[in-house]
Amino acid sequence: MTKAFERIFHEQNLDVNRELVVTVQSQLECCGLAGPQDWGTDVPPSCCAPGTANCNIINAFQVGCTSALEDWVDMSKHIIAWVALGVAVIQLVALIFACCLGNHIRNERRRSNY
Image (tube, one colour):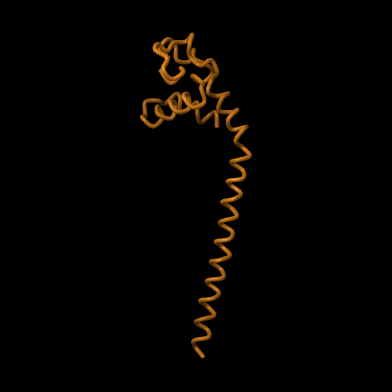
């Protein structure tokens, strides 16, 4: 996951990647990959708290987004696992209903032939 974010961070020429980096930085309160020094002297406003007039290396979030993203995934992995399990159960129930429906249709055709 961190490798993917590193690639997205380095390929910010695409609008989607730029928006993703801005969202991650503002939501997770992080800046750059390892810290605000990744931006050099041109720190974006998403690296600072909302309402900060002049965002620079000194008043930017000091936590790097790579470690913040790893922490978020660590905290969220149980929720992600339960959601995945829920989706799998729903698909299994749908498969059982589809088999029952197919069996019912086959039985109806067989009975109508007599």
